[in-house]
Length: 205
Figure 1 (tube, rainbow, N blue to C red):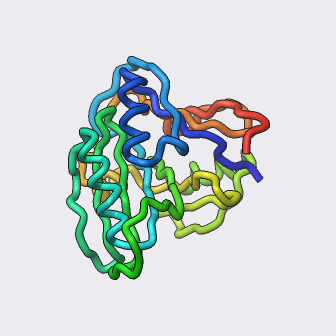
Figure 2 (figure 1 turned 30 degrees about the horizontal axis):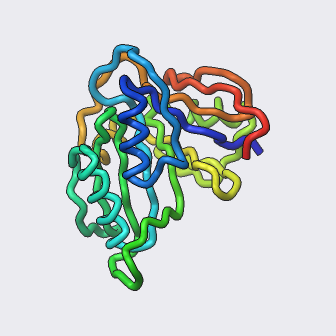
């Protein structure tokens, strides 16, 4: 099974980004490296933290804001649960959400899942592109949403329409230039139809 071994964010100030992500609580899950590639507007992806309770959502959002993040969508209840969206100082967009509407435990910063959502122009075509490179489909909702199967403890990969993903994040879908994210796996280096770059990361769990 091909899985994501690493997610690296390209940032103008790696030291500042490392400090932010350590304080945010996701420093063990994403890497950073220096890059000045031109980018404007929506970069075409979001990273989602799935947690078990609303107070955990609040804990992550509070830590992000304390580190200099900005609110794109305040945390609140919805028909699907509870969640909010923030933008890190480096520009990456993070959604923190839970399907629960009740707090039945302490406000830890335990992460149940991390999902990298790529906003793509043609979900069906991009799904086939990834299947051809060894990824296995876990969930699929036609041309709207695809989630690939991954091993436990790995970042999950999902595809969503670009405009729908931007709306979910609370931003305009317009954007140009670098995505400023590189995905590592054992599938070999390639660039997908929407310009997301993958690099080879062998022998890592």
